[in-house]
Image (tube, rainbow, N blue to C red):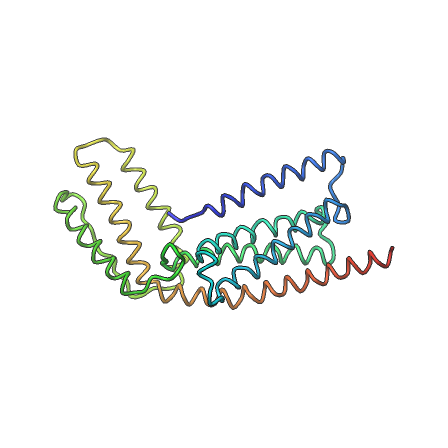
Length: 265
């Protein structure tokens, strides 16, 4: 099961922001415009969160003394949280008027968020420790051997569940991208067994399914490790320039807003 607490926290934050936004709209009897106090507040806070998204995680990753500031996995969770909530606030900032530069900025914000979700999906394809560091190939192979021993023990107890080792000629990008559907299928298989008729060997059958699923996951990780790393590297090559372009457009937008505000004043 993937850790998704940062997604849950992001959803909760967006719900509260939406409720507050609706409260302001009802109170003012109109949608907060980009030039209003609330519109500006959303834009400024959202942009600050996006700056934190772009800088803090990168700083922690490159810091030689970064360990003293906490685990990489925790920083990544915060990176994802700010990378979702910040753009959401920026999208609310123009008051649903996506014209000119604001429209371009909104489109790029959506692209960067979508890219971030895609990157997280690829990132979780590479096996890691709880601290966020990669697990090397030898350790994965040792885990697979232990799983094979456990499967053999359970097969001896229950001959009705044959286990077949995954055969693969090597991982591909398609294998990495199809992981979600494999996980969904495993959930339905587990549900079918749990809701099926009870019998003496059911507990062993469930344990066998759990170990088999873990074994197949490790086998996929071994087979797809090189493809996942290659795909993650390609994603970085696209995501980082896209993020820098977004900030360039945002700075132009902010500069133009300040300039015209001073000019009008």
